[in-house]
Length: 215
Image 1 (tube, rainbow, N blue to C red):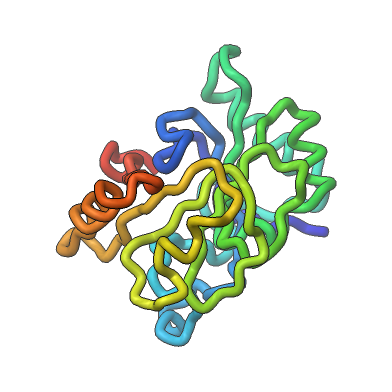
Image 2 (spheres, rainbow, N blue to C red; image 1 turned 120 degrees about the vertical axis):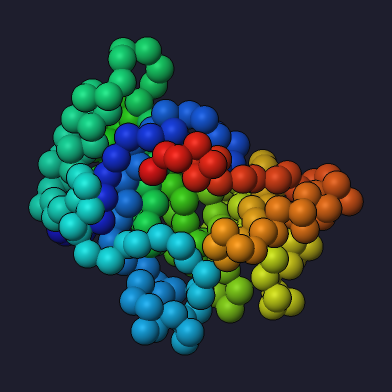
């Protein structure tokens, strides 16, 4: 298959259990819950996405015809920025990365020395060979991936099926609530903090890359 990549860049992971860890972010184009076009947002399954995943015109983006080609691209970004210390780490995100991330690409990234993480909406099953699975469920979207390393729920969501208690019995190591990003004029941090204080199974996850001015 041809892999369509919106952008690929070196930064620090800003969210969840690996906050602060250096990584190449590999953002695949496309999503199965929203077209990415503003004209379609109101009728989309997921309406609060804050990410541009349309096309292949971002920094480090493009189309890659072979798994080895994309793995070499990711490896080159890491090598251009990182010293030899620490295991190379790639975060596959989107959009929805599991629309494109397949076993041949996973194998190629592993052969290049990378530990592989995904950030997925959980509507597609994840290959077991992925090293770190982060699922971020969305209301009105059936969850296919019910186990992994971390579950990261955007909060608040108004729909009954998207409340934290709906996910507490799933097989994840970490449970995070992340304040929904409604722009600088609205903050949900206090609501998330209050929920986590009352329900200590859950931990607060902030988008620290935004606070630090990182991509």
